[in-house]
Length: 293
Image (tube, rainbow, N blue to C red; front, side, top):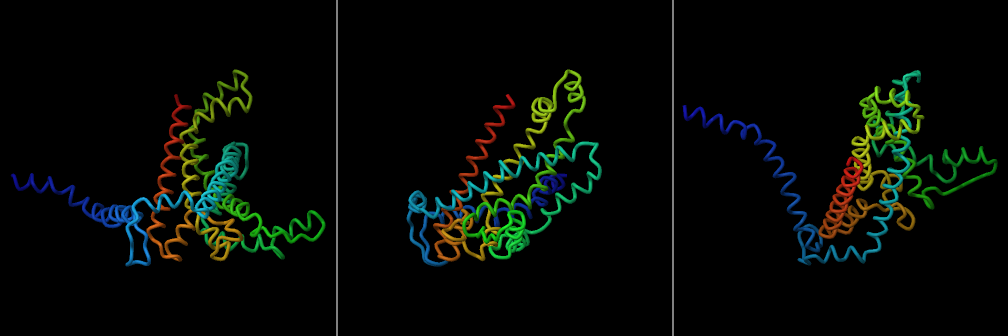
């Protein structure tokens, strides 16, 4: 009897063992090592010097880090204040029963998110090309004179924001559509009977109902924006663009760790990014809780 009880006690741990081992080897151990690595200045994979908090102190006086952080913030602002309102607008439009072909339009708007980021970068390269790019050709036909505007030289972040919008507007639209399905129609009908207009119904009925999902989508967009790497890296031909106008925090981390070889400073950049995202996540949560109260 005791043997059976002992076996049953260890059975859950036996089933959890693969996850625990995988987590310790590929998540917990690398995290601990990255903290240790961030306190060293490395010269390749084998030579390192302990510098304590020196790497983090250096970030405050590193102009390239602040340039990358500013570019990343600009992309995040475009994602939150341009991309998400478009996603919500499309969701509100396609949630109306009177719209014909809603399922087809949902598929059309969502389909760009199925393409890989590298494919999107390769697609928008010819669009933003200075001489024969599709965007300049369209502007030439609209304005009526030759235009060779260097989008990927002067307005790099604008191009990246546009490319990101094309890829993720439909993706975030799906989240808002799912949230709109949970709006209590009886409350909307009651507000309509009471004489509430479309804006009043949206503000006082729809927004409170979708607020939790909207907060999640905003957080997801911010985290995704701060992880921006492949799109500018491929679109700018493995560079940060003229005057580092396309440099992002993750791209700077990559350049520091794998091109320069200072893995310690790269780890410090990574942990600074993680701490910043945690602060933004907590701040967003506090703002949402204030509105909930």
